[in-house]
Image 1 (tube, rainbow, N blue to C red):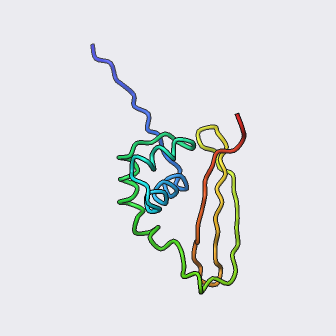
Image 2 (cartoon, rainbow, N blue to C red):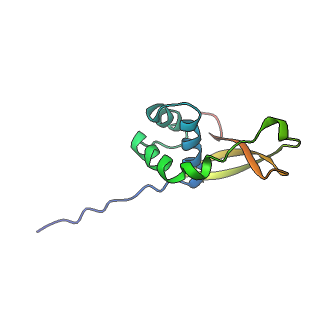
Image 3 (cartoon, rainbow, N blue to C red):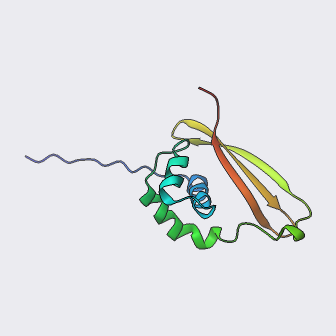
Length: 110
């Protein structure tokens, strides 16, 4: 008699994936980006590499020429990551329609 093993996939929210790719493009290695991401979600450096391949072309447009930035709007939102609240902040330039930067962090203190 064989037993069926059920494998549960851990889906990672898109903002967390984007933050990991941002960490990588900011100069961290894949392993260091995975280590920095542990505060939010524990994922491997291979997962981050896959996200870079998938999201890299999209997120490569983050930023703008500082001389062209006239206004900056910052918005925040709370997301639920596996039962743990986390905050995401985004800086946006409305005239250029460019995302300038973003940051994600767990909420609360322990």
